[in-house]
Length: 324
Image (cartoon, rainbow, N blue to C red):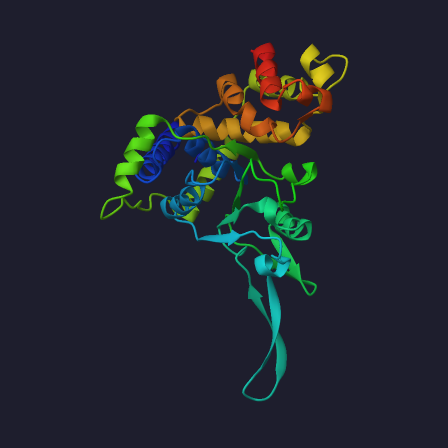
């Protein structure tokens, strides 16, 4: 699929998918768009928001609409790696022979929701994030490939930190995007309240299949990117690194900036956003729109900047304005 007709067909399918998701998820258009962009890019997303904002329902709905096998893991401090990736059990056949059989865990799905990932122990987090990166697991020295496509949508509560194990920076970098889930607007919350407290609720229907999603992902990777956009992505990402050439806010307030993986993420996500809009090539508007979700978990401000109320979000805003 490399022509305008294919792009138009895919854009229509994605618009239909957004419409179906909108029948169940009220408001949150930016969250839905960013999540779909992440999945079209073939990546994983970290959804950050307070409880009760339909993060779990969004993942369930995405599984239905995109035709993916979706599963959910509730992360707790006592969750073991084997509870996610699976384990071997010893069993005996009717002939009296004994042997080990592998029982796959919930990671063997196409869309896995890791609810409150920061409540899992570092060991369990590492097991999950390794499978996200390598798309396979090893148990007793035997490799088991994960299904394709394979995506993880993890959630995190930004307020309650008691009993949590914050993800290290290197593991946060495994997520293509960090998506903020805000409170819904008044009109959306009103519609939600009425629609979800009646005798029946709306249900989404499948629009795509796993094969269709993989075809769209292949289209995204084949999409051309102009030199102006390539240079713009490089300039934006490199402007977030605290060196002598950086803008004053970055130089004085950023402790570490985004690495090369941020360039790769912005390139893929800008292509995916363009495809979802029916365009055959991304623009700098796509890059600037996606910059907060792609960069916010790949950089950090200094302690003194934090004390002065300076946030990563404000730094990224300055970077975008300086690059525009």
